[in-house]
Amino acid sequence: MLQPEQSVKSRDWRFVLIAVIAGLGGLLFGYGTGVVAGVLLFLAHDFQLNGSMQGLFVAVALAGAALGAAISGLLADRWGRRRILLATAALFVFGSLLAALANSVALLFLGRAFLGLAIGTASTVTPLYLAEITTPERRGAIVTINQLYISIGIFISYGVDLLFSDFGSGWRWMLGFGALPALMLFVGMWILPESPRWLIRQGLIDRAKSALQYLRSTALVAEELESLQQGNANTEPMALRSLFNNWKLRRLMVIAVGLAVFQQITGINIVLYYAPKILQETGLSSPFMAILATGGIGLVNVLATIISMRFLDSLGRRKLLLWGLWGMLISLLALSLEFLTNLQGALGAALIVVTSAVFVAFFAMSLGPIFWLLISEIFPLAIRGRAMSLATVINWLSNMLVAGVFLDLVGAIGRGATFLIYALITFLAILFTLKLVPETKGLSLEEIERQFISIP
Ligand code: BGC
Image 1 (cartoon, rainbow, N blue to C red):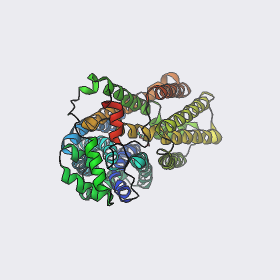
Image 2 (image 1 turned 180 degrees about the vertical axis):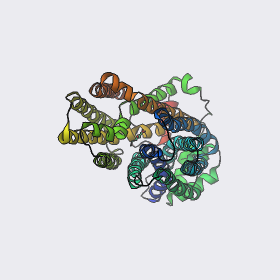
Image 3 (image 1 turned 90 degrees about the vertical axis):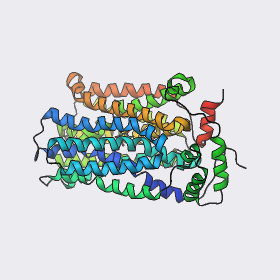
Image 4 (image 1 turned 120 degrees about the vertical axis):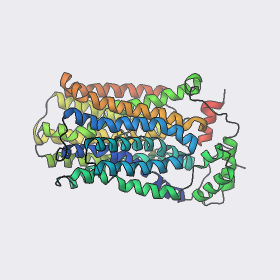
């Protein structure tokens, strides 16, 4: 008989294909956030939005995402992961169409708010579902399908923005296009089973067994079911406040929140979203070249995520995170130096593009995927959804904060000093990781729970 902590070695690739469908939630996240830059450029054709209204347009989706993230964990713990992913996909289709067809600013903003809600929900529940359907020895790669889709979503959004940039009302197509992956997710999740771990927690053992049979189709299902049942037996229900009252849970919360904040305040979205503007100001005068260079950086983001999937389960989370953070630190210092010395012209722009790409590559191999992976692993099943929600809300709020203050910060202290601050924060992230971040490679979720929580 298998012990809970033993991994169920499965040579069955069926659930990998399933994860490829379920991970589409990440595509909504990436596309939904990435498409804004292009939309904003062309909205003026139909609506006259001044600077602060444009800021509000961006903020509405980010605030919606924070709200979506806040409620999604509670809903996923209560109603199941699958139902919430289905609802998320439906909401995304609705929001995309509402915004794309809007004939007034109010409807446009309403559609964008719904989209934000769906993006926030997807950002929590996708890694949660992926972590719970996989086996320990592949969990790093499988959960990172979410991050891979985020990066692909961002990359596709650049392409769609470029494709429709010549149309008068191209922004409508840019927004409407998002309905397509959402529809694919909806159809996919209709067919896929609920998370077996969530079913076991609800006492629905027969359904958990059928879900495992669907996911694995190997003779080992009975053993895995038994090990999951043993691992999840006798776990008390947990109230949200135990995340703050119980010191073991509080420690896990500090790790999750710390990584959530560091993931954003080390500047990733500044590099990803302000790159064309920075490049144009450096001397890459053609907007086409600036967008092309940004596309190149987006592609590096995708490729580096694939590399991380190869190593997360062999090197481990901690080592990869530390190496990646050092790489980010060095490239941020280089960027800061490039801005401080006021590099100009084609050569200067090329150097900035390459350094930015190196920074993005290190992020995509470390802090990008590992934040989402660790928050899906370290919390006990009884409170996993709600704890992930909290960490994800903090991630979205930090995202808003960094985007909100970037231009003012550059205005006040200049670009070089701003990137120096990101570098210093990255150094703090290294110290934080060295002191607090645990290794979870190869352990089953039940074993992680026993190690971090149950053993006195
Ligand atoms: C972050 C996003 C970021 C993306 C870039 C994600 O892990 O949460 O804020 O835009 O990575 O690929």
